Image (cartoon, rainbow, N blue to C red; front, side, top):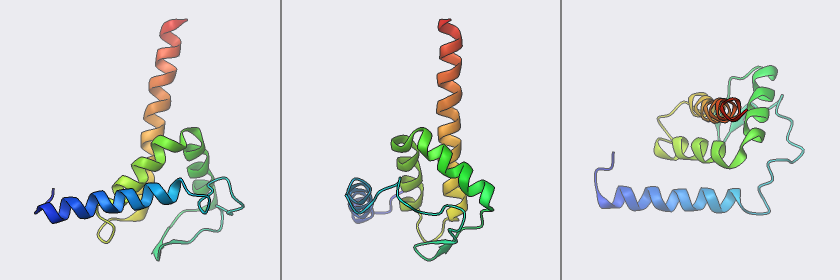
Length: 110
C-alpha cells in the first residue's frame, strides 16, 4: 500500500529503473554467472544451496520475462524489509504456476 502520491511515484520510478536495467546490454541473464557460487545480490545474502541456485536459473530460463518481473516487483515493493530468498521463491512459484497452467491446457487440447 502507498501512503502518499510520492510513494507511488517512487515505486514507478524504481520499477522503470529495474526494467531499463534488465533490458540493457549491461544485464545479460545468460552470462557467465556461476549460479552455484552466488552468495549476495545488492548486499542481501542469498541462502541457496547449489541445487537450489541451479533450479532457480532453470525456472527463470523457462519464462524469463514473467519470472523476472515477479522477482523485481516483489523486491521493489519492499527492498529493505523483504527477504530476498522469499522474493526468489515467489519468482519460482510464478513460473511453476505458469508451467502447470500451460501443461493443463496442452492436455485439454489433445
